[in-house]
Length: 173
Image (tube, rainbow, N blue to C red):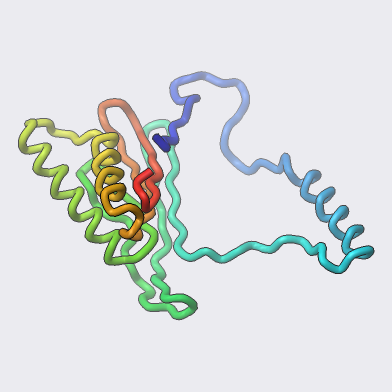
């Protein structure tokens, strides 16, 4: 599974964690200088630029929980369709999901799994849903449609086993 957890949770480390890390500054400067030298002899070598890919969704695991974030702009190619689109979806009281892709697909997929999770909670009598259960349900549902449901998801939540963060591709992997 595509789970991201922090292996250092609960460990006492002497090196500070967090903050900015500038380890790659010298490497990046070297790459730029080599590309500039190469571009003098050949006009085809240019520094690569950032590529705009659409929705930005992100998940972060920290010591006691999860942070999920998403932009609010919905686009149709280069046209802004909606400036205030909800991309963080409710799955269970302890589980939320960020969605990228077709807005209707992400909304209905998470709505369906949310109702299935609620039915499961009522059947089992558990107070808290497990994040891995929601992940498995989402993956099975998306796999069934073989990528025709355009929903790329970042699923996060906290359960009895601690914080969990999963990425789920539109084809269910």
